[in-house]
Length: 494
Image (cartoon, rainbow, N blue to C red; front, top):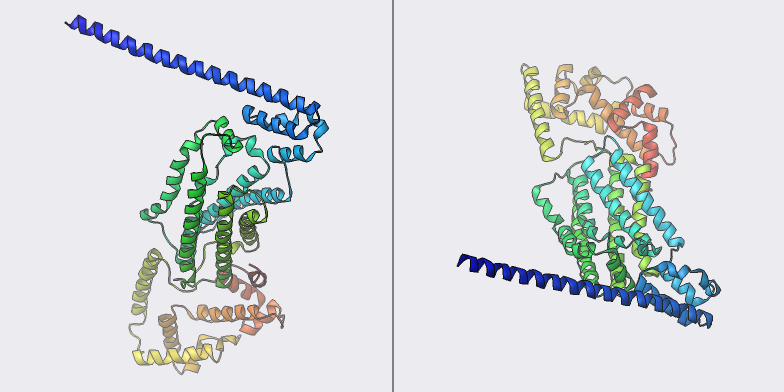
């Protein structure tokens, strides 16, 4: 019985293998037949093209050249030496324009922009003393813009026929524009720290990449057939749904970015004038990009790849790349770690500040525990000190001292020092210099007509010499007064 079963199984197995071999043989036979038909067609269209050429029939010649390309996938046939006689005809020039490498003013501009963008994305991340997270976000934003522009260059120059694998190469980045800009604004406005839930913003990009795998895994010949418009694979749904969903994504994130932008920053920074201008202009560029993409999307769905309206969206991306590049050169401080004017900071930083404050408070309590200064008197002296600084501008006196301030307050030096430490968190010289530097910055900002020199400004706010002024100014602002002057002049240009 077992032998019979084994024999039956062997017979069944042999039948399956025979059927498989037969199917394989039929497929190979069919493939050979199709290849033979294709080769015959190639030779036929080549022959017809040359025959039409001898008849001086340019329209028929270019028609058969087109047919030859569709069958052979070889665009170099256009450059065959036998076609020299028709080089100047409109029909032949249109064929060259459609398939052969070409360069115009638009492509030169885009190629240059893409190169600049890649360079900026690299250089920004090589800088030291920067907010690494913010820099990665904005450089990534510039990078994908540059990558898209370079892809457009490949299409406009017809290099895609030389490199079919570039087909839809930038499409996987379609849903990254919004998240990168959104989290960049959150970082620079709120010192935002990423959470695991933020990975959800990458889901659309993951979905589109998965959806495009069937396209990316096609052979070069199959991609070439799609680009020539002779493939059985219909990519129209890809174009339509990707374009529509990308616009929805861009519009949604533009709304989120605007909401972050219009909120008051939880931190007060030095050089906020330049930072506000920078954020405002980046937002404007993004709005222009979203609007222009709506126009671009309609054209792409209609398979229009040229014309002024087509170039509007690409140009808006190019201008943004140039703007980021120019700003990173003129105002590198915008990409550096930003110093606070007060003790407000992110949640983690607040913990450090609070802990430090508690420690300092304990120290001060020990230091002044024998002081006879009552709470009411302390508040009264603080108000008087504020008046001396804000209204009387006592800090302008180049010989101002703790004793002079104490005399004006009508109290002892010890009490005056206690008031400054408890209410301002500074020592006497730090307090005086902070007011001097603040006024010096205001003078520089409004020094358009007076044109005061650095030393004149130093004397004006109470410093005795330029060296001390420069040293104090740089300690407070990370730049010298001269550098700050240049900074203010350029800030309006950002």
